[in-house]
Length: 104
Image (cartoon, rainbow, N blue to C red; front, side, top):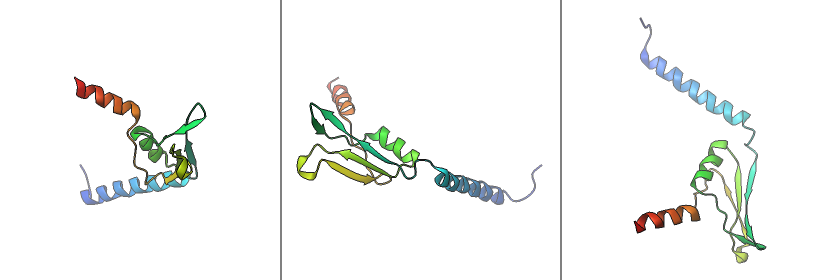
């Protein structure tokens, strides 16, 4: 037998979830971490923007900023984005996989 209002139970669960989220932000060892991603081949840098899976992991970890090489010498070769704002890049592996699926 249950006593009380179901609405109160729901609001208490939501409060607990929010409290857990806030505690995780405070105790997050990655909250002040910046990540640097670079691809180098034969001394030349290439585009290294994180893929979808990497961006999701970065956001879940609560990492602050992501620096990545652009491969564009005119722009200084590096770009910095807040991890919460970064939009994933389609990796070359996924592009090739999609290309092969379309051929079948």
